[in-house]
Length: 57
Image (cartoon, rainbow, N blue to C red; front, side, top):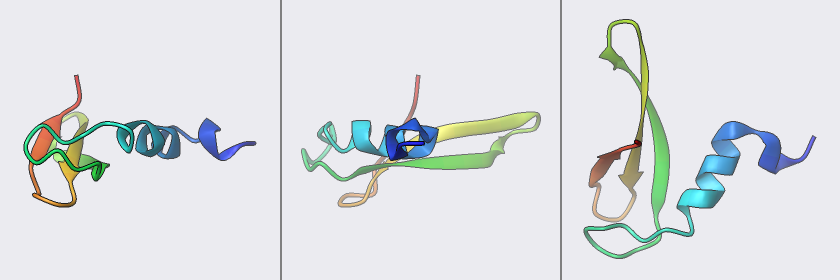
């Protein structure tokens, strides 16, 4: 199985191509936040440079 077949790794590779809307750096990483919803988890995106967080739609 290729690394791109792993969902989180594939998401990381895709996010690395996008600039952060706040600072413009290409340091976006996925974060799984499981305390957001009582019945599930939510994927967030965080910029490692400016620490801004975004919800994945």
